[in-house]
Length: 362
Image (tube, rainbow, N blue to C red; front, side, top):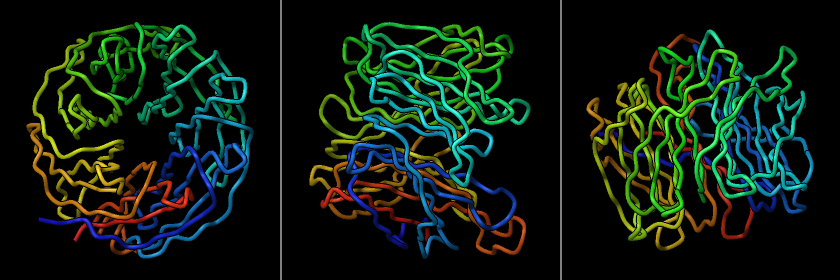
């Protein structure tokens, strides 16, 4: 079975909040631009574009841009645009879009917000829709649907609300039979429990409706991924340990619990889905473990939703970490010769500086 191998490292300046995304180029070897979005040493939003070469053997910075003061950052790729949802200096949710070359296209602000999350509606027929989730001024969950205009400017479409929350994560599920789009929020509710809520949105995004929900035990530090109708919540459970729960969502709004896997003590978690050269599917959790080190744990995903721990690797001391995957080819000159994934972790290291690390499986 394949295992994770560290490939390259790159550094930048001081950060206190971060996220990372990849604008991919499908069908050919180069995987596109890796873009980090951080709160820099001056408290401002800073975007940097990176080239991760070949199978992750080299990471080079290609440039960057600055925006205003922020205190929270969440990013997503929407139709080859990078979209950031931030808490701006007025305490409000602000959505900003850029091209892959970090040319700013537009922005729109909404209400006061915290615990901001974002996900794209990744469909070929309507690639310009996305959703945000946040904790509003009263402490309640608010989810909203947005779109990008022909010029790339974000516009608010519609919203819905739920009860009190203290953490929010979002992921897209797919097309529905009634309301066109289905997406999922994973929250820490007023009781401190994990709660999954499935939402449906109309074709124009103006109508957002709650479809169903399910709860689990006491949690914090929630990370959320989806693969078709499979749902993966990676979290810190009530005992302070890593716990991954797999679920299956249904178009009627119901959600079934499938499997649970656990590991040791953690203080933070991020997760991503990817595959190796054989086509095997993996969930990778990037955690700050009990020794304050970055630890990546690879879990093989079976079609049933069952998880099998595959390998793990430890890097240096961190206080923040996020992981993403990118499609890559072993032969950049050919179409799909041996597709696999390069993993990219972006972290705040022991010196409080930004650090990127690339990983592959061997």
